[in-house]
Length: 540
Image: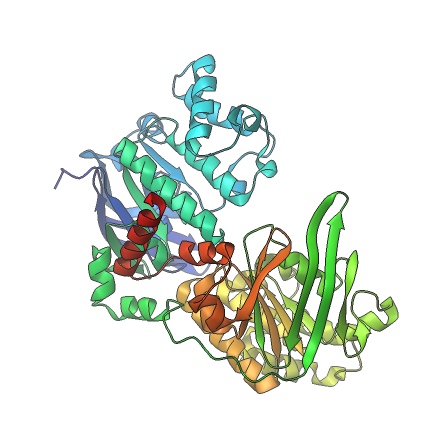
């Protein structure tokens, strides 16, 4: 029993809240060995991150309290060690990388100094730490390490910031690395690069790797074993391939069934009249060209997906359509008027027809407003839509349409889960009875089952209200399930367009092919064959 590198035994964690105690983790047992990858899979609130935080002594006490269990590292119980003993292990022997590197990198220090400090705190001289920092930056693929070491976190992309976190975590050559959602919300190609980097570094160092994730594709790509958690308990565990091929617990079966990209590709409906016609759209910021000569149509009743990596211009295009930014070239015709140049007096009325659902509802919903105020604000701005006497009734109806209830009207955004907040954002967009809704990465950070629920909701609302969607996403399996047509963008330009079937079954451009190859399949066996085929192509 003491042979495992890291072992969690019968761990229970309780948080004390105003509504009483909440048992976040109940009797959890898992382990990881040297050279092994363990994935802890589950949705938000399943307890997977809490159990990992307990290993790192990162649970705030109070309100949290470890009520039972042991955490054994090389046979010694971390929970009975002194603060000084834990500090000597954390970072040096057991390290952790977090989901949002921008929140965990200090914005006022250069990244080089921050990595150096990790080494200096554990006894390495400043001069040696500086040399090792440059080696680490090179190892994790940061270009021009000497110049990059002098930059600040905000000067790097999301994928590069995650590489910086990995460099910091690996600085002291830990025996165990815990990665908490290390690729959530990253582009598919960047996600593939980060996972490949973790695999390569693990092979080089022989460390045990614990990946915390809600993404079955990540499990299929990298994990040897998987532990499935739900509501604070482990409901199933085994090899990644075995659990996927033969799930025993109903929760695991539902998770696998909800994974996107497994159904038949939908055939695009017959063309109706174009609703929006974009020709030659462009946007520059000084010398930088963010968007170059975009041409496309959005048809009535269709879902048009725009895919591409960060910086490809897809969100810029959406912001131009809503006049959140002004285009520097081109036109976008809607009902005989150019959205790019229509005067402000007419734009106010036209904005009723084109609404937006943003990626992060926590930021897009005012935390000081109740759900009722958030929804009814649209009617205050456009008073001709609905008399005030009917606001309460209509707001309740909209909440019911998106799967919530009238009893939620007087709560605040922080009292809801991420999926529920996104439903509120959709209800708010529907309040103006729009013809077009632009969804900018609206499901990218949601758990797989919640993501499937929101996609089904959007599909149903489209049929019931005759909506058209512009669906901006980097998650290709979701696009495959939801879109009628796809535009592929790179570096501000449209590189390929076609029906969903054409793009996924017969891509023409190398960039599109690379995007599809980087997308992860939830089936470990399919992912293994895919990886082998790519390796063979690279060897050729």
